[in-house]
Image: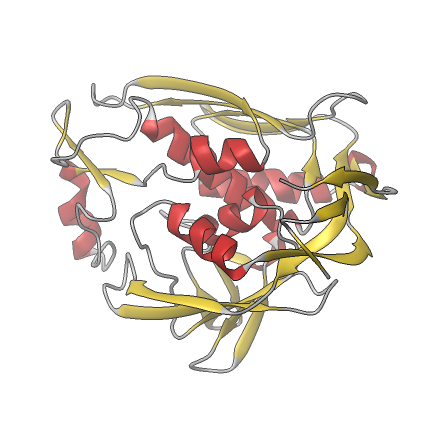
Length: 303
């Protein structure tokens, strides 16, 4: 294994050097949660493990069983919810193999972003193996549409960035409104432009959510709350367009459930967890839409 801080061959699968964990609150359950990132065998991918019941669930799009307000994966009656922020951190830092252990049916919300997960993974030490990484190349445009909601993937040409992204959101509340963001996904863009973006909700919806047994652990410490054209949180926003940044963070996490880094262009309009998952299902529904490519790595210094 090679440390991330040493000269390395780009294009090899990455994992972490040592276990690291944290404790927090489940956003929807409102109960205390403990989780750990644990090194996993090279080539095994990302696997979530419920330590309380001894059940492991692969981090893949076809294990997604619920997309209401967050992305939940499951096998049978066993569930692990709110996986998208952890998946975004793993994808953003280019980590391919890790075991995510959690002692309940939901991952902790922490501050509502992916920044603390990315910090933990960096502290654990990101290392490269001797196994080349495969990428999922998009070969044909793939689109899913539901009314005014749209998500699509397009091929990129040789020499273009691996994963350019563009997303537009549109909310009636003036504090959010219509926002657009375009960026090229890489580790630095992720760390500085997406990872700290927090989840958000409308104050008018909180009562109904809690009556439905959701958002029991939500607070101003882990979500932006918007009410009547203003942000309720006393500290304000981290960016004026933090809302679209968080939605793009969700896209990164949801599409990381493809099982391999995607090489393609993403375009979205008002998309959310359900449509992001539908996009992956549409991609994999036709083998002519994609191909798995294992490239010879290029000698480079890893930042």
